[in-house]
Amino acid sequence: MRLTLRALISHGRVARKMGLGPESRINMLRNILTGLVRHERIETTTARADEVRFYAEKLVDYAKRGDTDEKAMKMASFWLTEKDLVPKLFNVLAPRFETHSKGYTRMARLPNRENLDRAKMAVLEYKGNPFPPLYPVKKDNELTLINQLLRGYREDRAQQLATKA
Amino acid sequence: MINLTALVQSLRRSLLHIESRLLQAAGLDRQLAPALAVNGPSLLPQLDKEEEVEQQQHHPGLSDSILWMAAPKKRRTIEVNRTRRRSDSKLLKVKNNIEPCPECGHLKQKHVMCGFCYAKVCRETALIRQQIKEMEGGPLRAPTVETVVLYEGETPSEQDKDKRIVERSRKRPAWFSQ
Image 1: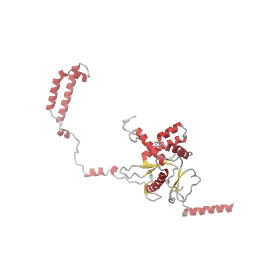
Image 2: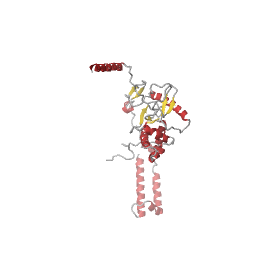
Image 3: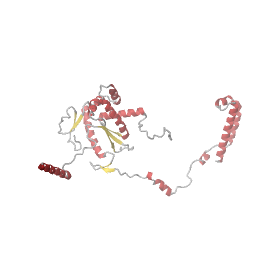
Image 4: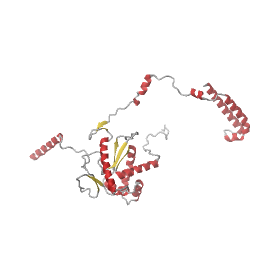
């Protein structure tokens, strides 16, 4: 039962509007995607990063088809405005994500921008990039008391089993 | 206000009169502009009289329009003011999702990255990117091979055979394990 005016209320509309219109949105996302493919880690607003994520993953899916594929090459040349990134996409990113079926990108929210607008920022990166990781891998410290005690217990158990057998 | 109603009434009367005249002139039902144009001379003296009648009446001046604008009736008491100013929507909300970062101890929100740790990573990536820029030597020269960053005293391993090597002249930081 439609109780509201269709044009003015946007309940349940999931598609984002960016820039001056749909064409402007695509152009903006194209620029951001080119930057992402070049630098492999970029910092933008949360909404833009979320939008680009979809296109970044789709682009890698197209790249996996190989550069002999007509459609894949057309897509790559449309989406990457800097043409020296097309070989990079096909020869670096596609082999890197050979084993991954999906989830080639990682997005993390950052503290708000320092400017007056206090915009919500996010960092978007392709996995497997050469830079230092955003979330450092936590290594277990062998020298803590609990770990030393557990190690002693494990050794004792192994000794007991050895003497029993 | 009385003047206004009289004005409105007179306007309505004049409009109805014009309509009846138009219907008469046209001899048809609900035909407006062409009929008026055709029978101009016969209607004109009538319209002049109507305009004079209207002008004799009071124009809607500024004093009249002020009378029908919205205005507060009574002074808002301090109690009413206080309840409005201190209503729940206007008070500052308490955030209970702030916690210290386990790495550096600076405060961060639970769903957001630690600003200090990210700044640390940013600084190192900026230096790596500077080195890459020097190596590439110009714009639009992205290589078609992977890149790996090696610090002082490190040799390329088995996996880094066909990768571009970016040398950084410092010790490997503890938080950047290979």
